[in-house]
Image 1 (cartoon, one colour):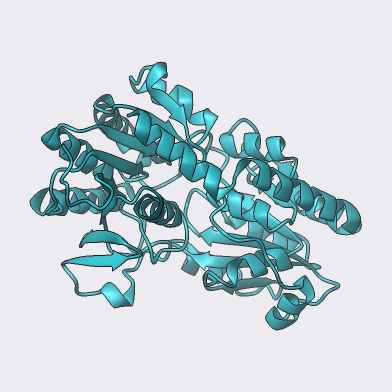
Image 2 (image 1 turned 120 degrees about the horizontal axis):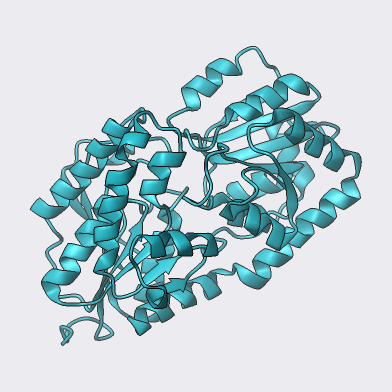
Length: 409
């Protein structure tokens, strides 16, 4: 039975390497989920997390030098464990990253009474393994939510040495998912890959990510003036992680082909320095730091089009979380991605943008020029994306789906 001291008679443990104050990637989803359970279920909620480091791949200065600590944030107790953070990505460095998360989690699991369930956000294999182990130890349901497929990521992302570790990573995923009570996946395109890892179809549930940002409220012209973006210039904005799988070189090449376009890369990541070097001679490329939470939707809305890029090899390993934020901003999306992957499926479903072949700067430029030539159509495309987000990607609906998954488990 649950400890009667738990506020609502329920104690829940969420394992997520990424958590607030991280504002990109998986962190906002884990944070909003845990805070929702604390507020709406009146549960005692604990989170086992790493030190904030994403997307910069540098530990947040406020947490440097810390080994173990417990943060209390919005009624949630966050148990943080130090781990290795690689400044550059390779298969070996990624293995060291995962290994340090796993090792410290095994040495110092959160000191809490028996939870009623353990949920894991699984872009991190180590986090999934830790969650599975804690659930077995306490004899409670284990529910992983698959945000990324790491075996597929190793094979598709272009990370150095990735091909050699893809089979190993898939083997670890298979073992971790085998013990799950139920498995949540964020997109239909993940179902077959998860089934191929040995999870029976009847144990897989669809729990799409939601739009975790609020709609913009300020006039676009005000934000553009503050950023120095002339009204007559077409601004293409990419926001988020600057990593290998994004294949952001295509944007530098597009800027070189079309000097009338302004290409803005906003965010951080392992490839940022390399991209800055490539763009050094291009006056129409800007690199901006990540925006804070309040400014983020306003900057998205100020752009003329929002960019999603992936390497041609990326098919079913992930669906960029930025896409949900882009739709809310009500600007057309240009997606330079494989046509049979989950990102392309989502763009077609929303009718909120233009799909172009990956790693093809000329096609990306053509789509941008087409939208720029017809502002009314661009606004209509953006409005369709916003309508899709309102109808299908609301925070309330997303959180309710995961809570229903938890209740079923």
